Length: 149
Image 1 (tube, rainbow, N blue to C red):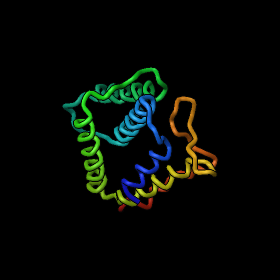
Image 2 (cartoon, one colour):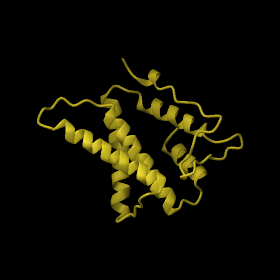
Image 3 (cartoon, rainbow, N blue to C red):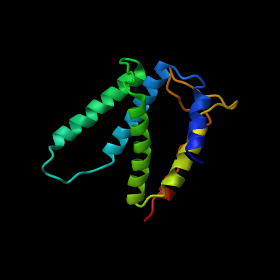
Image 4 (cartoon, rainbow, N blue to C red):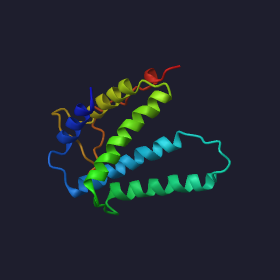
């Protein structure tokens, strides 16, 4: 699988994305950033850990507000947004590689899991806020095998 397959999944889910779809997807993206931050531990004493926890809490609140439609977002500069998104993909792969993970295998596994969110007819299932939900066919990704020991 590839970025093209991920793009196809999103295009299948939202053939004509709306401003609300953008808002929800940004909320989902921030939710994943929060999950990443929660998975890390920092030992630098010069950074106040209460500030770190506050930052994570605020990002989580913003993600929830976006996903639930309690706040809106607009794009100020599409070129800068595309640059940041592409850089995030590249640096995310780099983080996984530096952490000795099979990122390609992990992305393939998550992508397969995401496809299982669709119903028996291949259609996306949405929750009341417009986020893609898990169908009865959902299969959680098995990622442990992509962690190099």
